[in-house]
Each structure stands twice: as C-alpha cells, then as structure tokens.
Length: 158
Length: 158
Image 1 (tube, each protein chain N blue to C red):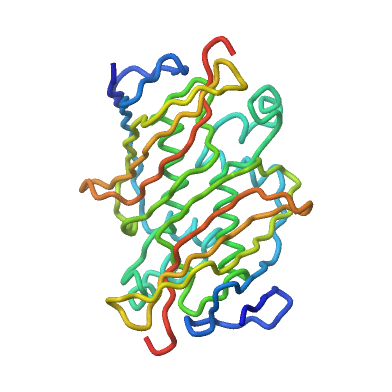
Image 2 (cartoon, rainbow over the protein chains, first blue to last red):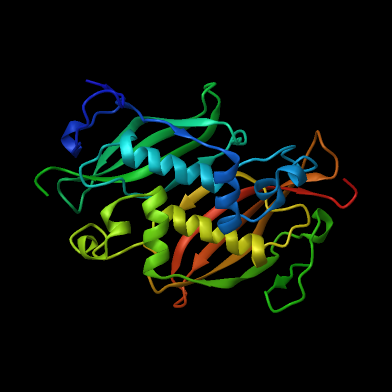
C-alpha cells in the first residue's frame, strides 16, 4: 500500500521491498539567499543574472535568479539528507529535468517525491530501476523544478 | 551553413541569426580531481561514493565518482565560459539528462554541443527555442553526460 513519508517521521533506510508505486516522500527544507546563489554561480554558472543582483534587473530574469543547476544540486541534497532514505543511496542514471520558474534569493526549498514505476532488473536479481517524480517547491508551493529520475535500488539481500 | 566553433577560434557573441541547425561547438577543458569531487559532494550530494575514496570501493561505483550534479554543473561552466558563446547568455528551461558512466577523479572534461532544432517564438518576435545536444566527454572521449536542453535565444534587435 502506498505510504507517505515526511521528515517528521522516523528515518528509515528503505530497500527495494519497502517501496511501492505511489509512495510519497517529503524532504526537509533548505533556505536560500543571495549569497549562496552568487557563490554557486561564480563557480559553475557565471552569468550576470546569477551573480550580480543589479545587472540581473535588466536581463531575461528581471532580478537575481539561482542557476538551475543550483536548484538541482540543492534538490539532491534534500533527497539525500531526508527526502529519499534509500539504504544503498540515491543513485540515478538521469531523467527529464524542467525548471518551470526561476528560484529566487529568499525561496525556502523542499522536495516532494513520488514513486511512479518499479521495473525489476532482468540481469541482476534483487535490483530494480525505480522511476520517481521529484518536485522542488518553494514556501508558496510554486514548482521550481521537476525531475523524473531513474534510480537504481537494491534489495536487502544483495 | 553549419559551422564548427572551437575554443581556439576567436570568441564571438552569437545571436539567433548567427545559429544554424547542425552548428557544432567545442568548449575548453576542466581538469577534475578528488578534492573537487569531495568538496562538491559534501555540500550537495553527501553519499560515501562521492565523499570517501576508501568507502567508495565497496559501493555500486567501486571507487570515488563525482556526483552527477557536479558533472552537470561543470558542463554548464564550460558552456558559459567557452562552449556556447550566446550574446544574451545560456538560458535553459530544462531537458533530458543522462549519465552513461561515472565521472572519475582524474577526468579532464570538455563539452561538445550541436544545434538540433530552432523554433521561432510565436508570441515574441526575434526570440526562439533552440534545442541542443550537449555531450560532456573525458580525455578518452568517453561520454559522461548527455543533455539536450531547450535554450532561449534572442535576436540582436531585441
């Protein structure tokens, strides 16, 4: 039966047999600010709309916005620390990624994940490809990122 | 006519009218090492196979591997700094992301991008959605990441 896991619930290390299609997971929160946005962008996405609040006003984003890759990296942090407590780790081979709207300096992020599909491996018994949908939202419930990763999940005996 | 842009060629700031389907772009390089991998992972993807070279040996990755999000962030850095010299910046709404194999401590990364499709905006003249395929490769030509972003590109007059 589908379950909902919130960060307030006791943390469990989940194996393949513990997962069902429809299970939902809610992560803890991460509070963003302009300094974090600029620091990440200076290293990985040095463009004015991510590094310079003043220059950002005259750009496509009309104000400072986080690099999409910053939103993605913070989403991973939230999934690893609280959102998806998988026993052998959160290991993905990729997926479809969308940023419906920019992440802004005062956004407080959390991630809501849902198990969409569980496909047992033919070649490796006890292992499965698990497809999930991970939505990263701010404090107003606005969706900042959608990511549908394919995860490698193993059973307890492997 | 399709052109190939390499980092050795003079840097140009490209507008929509400068792009054609089939144009290819080759970025400069980024040399990775274990310290960078661990530093990124400690902040955004704190799992043993990304943070602890010894513990990583007994995991799915059989040795230290970079977070996929680190590969993605470095890909963006290479595109912004040299790979895709778009006049108004590299702005994406998302895309399909794949990591065919792990990025390792001594990999030297570069990005090869190709323009797949140019779809003019109906509502905003002079703007287009440009789909690209970006392959991130190491010094042996092994593909570490494939990403097919949809980019917002504007014409010179906008």
